[in-house]
Length: 229
Image (cartoon, rainbow, N blue to C red; front, side):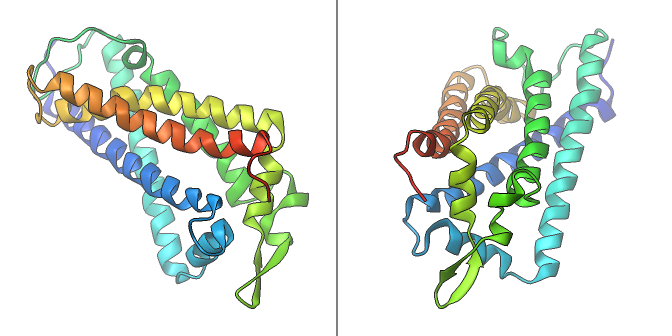
């Protein structure tokens, strides 16, 4: 059964939106790492800086991110159905490589990440989970003004074992998803060959591992009592 041009186009769009989310994950981690104090005022100052941006910019960025996520999920489901219907995956550059646990379970790790994203937004963005510790209702002084206590909200959240467990588990899924997704992007776009693919696979795994370690460090240090509000 031959692949149609529309099928290849969907795969390319899924690859591009996937890498856009990888870029967002890197930027998001850099911002979240301000919780360790490298930025004056810590994560409270970082959050206040984001919320001080013009509302149209904030809304536009969120809508763009939502569109990227929806496109990635939609095409991911379509391609999974196609593959299970007997259509083999097709890349711009063919490469002989063995299937891995990560590559064979992309739909499941992606599904877990989608569920986690909904939980994460409810927890720290819309703050409807544990409203008693919500940053918006617990203000602290910063630069001669009162700002939402994001630091207190995050610390209170990750002191709970189950909350930390959910976040660490989600980051395991993120690592597995990215360890295959990053290298798959280069293969899909035709930017790799049999000689370069092993190097790309290793680099993709290192990026996925760096993001995993960076994200899990926050809940683990808080739960262990090393990082305190």
